[in-house]
Image: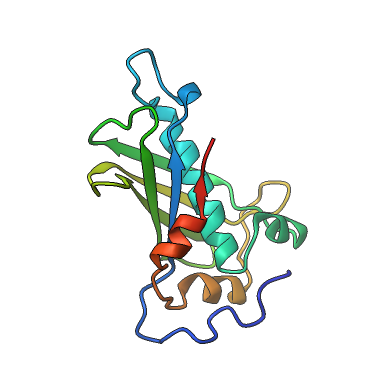
Length: 165
């Protein structure tokens, strides 16, 4: 599997577990007639945030699949607290929860970028499988990559991950 050979280089050992911030602007196509983002968009934003967080760790879905592993969603949940509206910039804060050689849990918080007001909290649970869908154990290096302490992203790094229409 192609991974960053030294993804933790230069990172302090006291840093937090892997986390990332992904920003997106709510597009017109993502809202209803009242200008409120559709509930299903949050799940899509979680997926984009998860993909970018893994990429930042040196692990892409493509590399994972090329090495014979898939990481399908087994469970997803989202608690909606306040609406995101057309043209709002939403930050999706993603962090890794429980990790083993069988499963990966990711936790999400969607917030208004300007105010920090929490809009939603979510969770996805993934299991490692082979291409035919049978559960398998991930390589220990993948688990190490996901559980190694990391520094928090800077404001500049967070802005670099913003999707705009």
